[in-house]
Image: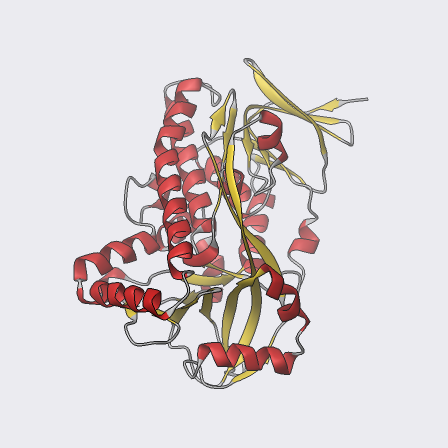
Length: 407
């Protein structure tokens, strides 16, 4: 027998970082939601489940402040005071360091801490009905509303369906969205490192022909041990071999690529690897349906903008829906969805294009290509306006920002 629940404003499919941030932001504006996710939150927040860390831009931190989770996250933040960009550690590097009155370039957080903060806030929010460990067996959309039927027999109804399931979004696939995509034939190898020198809150992006090698600052351990997060891009064929290396051999390869920037690498944590690809949808809305985050656009992690781009989607969608609610409009109103698509479509495409271009530009092998890149980087280093532009992009404070992303 099917059990039907009350109709809510939003039916959010996917309760990850973007989906849950969207639900909390919507609740702050008085919009109710059902959030349906396949995963078990206890597993997602278990110690050791996910050693990845994420860079949160200045704008995204404003959003966390505005939805009420920043205070609980503050103690886990590691500021990114500057970013050093080099081509294979050769001369001609760029240093991005904002003025003292501009704050940081972002903050690093363990993914586990981000999940815990969002999940704990969602569990206490009456406008969010969170259904975890749930399998959606049927999605329904019509001019009158939307619904999801679960394997348990429950039927959850809403006025707007939001696909927030990530790169492989079944809702997007079922709706028949046109997708431009390609495989970089690269894998990102991710691990926590301890090292002898302090990182001084500097994030390093060292480019090699096989892909970027990023060292991201993390908080020291309680005993003062210095820590950073490694994101090392390797070719698909090399990925399996890198993952099979013993710790000593792995550390030797890491040390070779990073030189002395963090001193001696003393230990490595649990390693994981993820395939890297690009995808972008031609549109991000359909009848009573909106896409957010990786369901709409999957980009290379070269600039650390993936999650921040998804949070911009969430903030824009909430602002559009809240404006509509003040006028008495239904969340699934076609004109509201058109406004969301116009707002987010170009920005997400430009960020996606920029990260793809960077990936290809720095992937061209040979000394001549390296010399040209370093010449260009030296020019950026000397041009204050260009550096400010790139830093504003990294901090997420450029363009037409939703209210939730402002201080």
